Amino acid sequence: MVWKRAVAFVCRSAYIFDCTKLPHSLNGEQTARLDAALRLAEEHIAHPHGMTELLDRKCLDLCVSLLDQRLTGNVYSSALVGFLAILGIDEANETYLDATKYTPKLPAFIKIAQLSAADPLDALDAIRSRFMTLNNPTPFTWALQLRAFGKQIRDSSTSMGYVRCFCDNPASTTRGWNLLQDPRNQKIFKGGNTLLLQRVLEQTALREEFGTLEVDGAFAWSRARFQKYKTSATEFLEILLLLVHITGGQSARGPEILGLVHVNTACHRNIFLEEGLIAIVTSYHKGYTCTGTTKIIHRYLPSEVSELLVIYLWLILPFIQKVGLLLRGKKCSPDALERHGPFLWPARDDAQWPSTRLSVFTKRETGDTFSTPITVAMYRHIAIALSRRHLEEDGFRRDYGTEENASDRHTAHTIWTAGRLYARGLEQAPGHVESRRSEFRATSRRWHSFLGFAVPSVKCRLPFQDVTNLQRPNPHFLSV
Image (cartoon, rainbow, N blue to C red; front, top):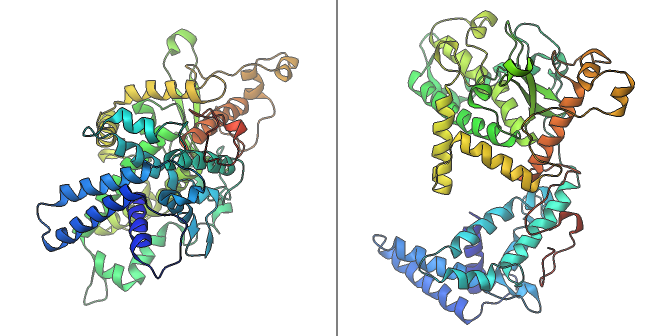
């Protein structure tokens, strides 16, 4: 979408003369390729069949010519640099986008630029040496500098919060409890877990989409439409599973992540809200026969993914549960809702999704994106390698232990004993130790920063740059 806007911007600025005069201009090659693309587009409108591939080729030629331009003098003489400036305008509020909203637009521009050079019909090495190396002042290197500078601003400033005002009591063992039941959240979750159901019944368009009104005034739900909604919700859950698997830090094994429970049953749930982020807490039993201990691992989701999970638990899941009961002629009692099962990724018969489902979905998504399917086991190796290369300290570690500190040695206890027995918070969940939780959170936050999420005051090592010494973009060099 970003490059579609770039091509449209170039066309409008080149051929619409009553618009604001901009400082950029096209060179001879760029003008020729733009004219060729527009002529073919006109023919394509008249004869739409059989010309799509050729038109795509002409547009690609135009994009490559726009990238293949050295920035000398006024950098805004480049149409692409001018477009990147226009991209920062907030049209709705008639102002400029801040770094947290502008910077995420740049990776799409950069990635498509890289893909445009990966054309077997062109001399790839020659193209890279002209406009995709760090020592050449081109629109591509300008975008890299702009992204690095914007990321530095974003990571050193705060953004609008989404989940931080929610409350949770991890220590509660009450059956049916999760963060939605915390009385401190009642003002936030307006309408409770019936909000979507009420909206469908109150709004005419939604009511007509999901069913029909009977003669006696009762509402008859459409099973086909409800099944379609459930299918969409399942697709959402698949994407959410991949996001949780990737963004929480070192990825959990399939049975661990698919066994997440969002509500207390006879056993304690393992999805919590801690200091504004969703924490998933799993037990790690491998090596139990040797050590006699079970490791408890905390993985924190970035605020954007945390928000998606909360919205699912608050709005989508209750709607599916309640409408499902109504279709079976049952009342939406708490006992009936509880029988739907506590798993975040539920299968039939109150079971969890099988591990093979995570493997199949991961391979499918990575195959579509990278043309090379990546298995769950392969991704675990990739994540560890990335963390060692780009995270401060030592990246993800095989064992999630915590070093003892002087304060704990003063008590003549290990850090585990100090955290397990002394000065435990009233809302600290059973089995959770504060020092280890803090370490897991810091590791997750460094991983969030590496993935591009906004994390104030957290830095990670990025390739091709030293983020601690970033300066304003300079059109003639990159900070290496």
